[in-house]
Length: 300
Length: 334
Image 1: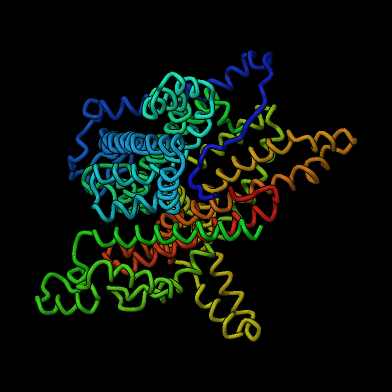
Image 2: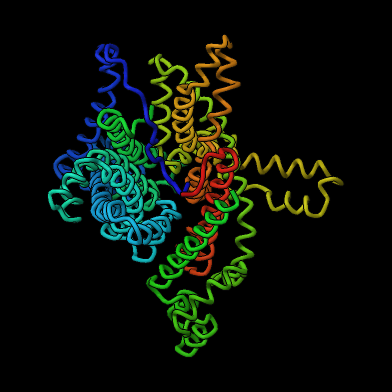
């Protein structure tokens, strides 16, 4: 079946790398450079989100009547300018990091917690259980992530929890498929046979043997899906279906700023930049982790 | 082969049904009464009851569900609550705009993405070439299409005034001319209409195409890497072929086979992209129609748009699977 969507990691096998070349400093930098940059960017984002009340110079909702739609550096207090209500764009972006990160992490955790057990059960048990689970997953896979999240969030209404739920459900089939694929390989291993010979039941085999062995690859892909989740959240908020204003999220800052791109392009420019950097950070970490940890998923 | 095609179609049918059921039930749990949305809060109870009856919303859910499936099969999605026109008419009017956008974006993505992917794969040992190209791919993958769209609008429409800020151009006019045969009698007018469409299309197609190019370049890079490690490439080289001949005659042609499978993926991403792209560029199209319909609580319109999106994606995937089986006879349905 070729029902795929989003930028799924390319599943291509490779030969063993040249050992000597692998040890050269240039190669090391090439290998660990991206992950270092990605981890650093992601860490900065986490710190910014966690310490938003301390880091934001002004309140994200405070309106300054003397600085409506002023450019970066206005009044010596608005580093990135202000919006149509005279609110500080920099502070709003800092607070917006919270929403993006919360939705990004929570929706992936939700999808992981729901999808992985289902995928492992499907892969290990096979037969009818597998058919039922996989057909349901395929059905959801027919919708692109944003479209499915859009349907769910329209049905439930825009709020933080609903957005997490919508994106989480939309991402779940990806984890089901991946976990099933991994479980199918793992269940053929000798140690699974050994575990069964020792009297291990299905549940024990799945929880103690299949899951830990699939964990590596799952975590790598989960990191990549954090990027997808952050981008989807921004997209939903941009369409006006995410967190309702005045709570700042990068997508709704950008969406509100859209009406003022002629006079005040800084609102959209900086909020969009924040979205791109956050997505880039998790893409970098996910890509690099995949290359480093799991040659089975490596793209080269 | 026939067996494979039949089984593949049989799998697609329940998937399509399932996806349509999801759309139907999601639209039924939506907050707010469609009749209230249509007639406003001031409507009398009798008027509301009348409306509910007219829309068939007083019937049991199961009856409504079967009715929806049956009508959808006939491309009948009811009338738009806001405008009163049939939804199918709307969809047929908006579809060409979205199709043109997706096609143009696909051209941009293929022209940019495939060469970059191949070049990056062939020069993978040269970090000065491979690295910047991979960074390009990562940037494209991380850049939200709506942000890129806004940046393009700021620079090329507002500052430089080279491209229009909103609209989709005279596509309806161009299509009407093709239908009426005026394309032959008044070729000048037709070309003017086409030029207008392209003028309006340039920025959206570039924005959507650029973000898609990233995915295409990554996939063509790994497809190329896989192909050039094959034995027949070594044989070609051993026969003394020039490297260029090896790449163009042997590697490139074989690389296109795995690349085919991504068309399905591509259509899914591109269609989602149109929702955002059309909104940013205020272009008519299915995506913008869907967003507007949701905003206006016009459920039949939203339902119709989502159904069409889903049907397109499932159909394209089905077609790709078959195409893949034709191109590569080793593939059979398991």
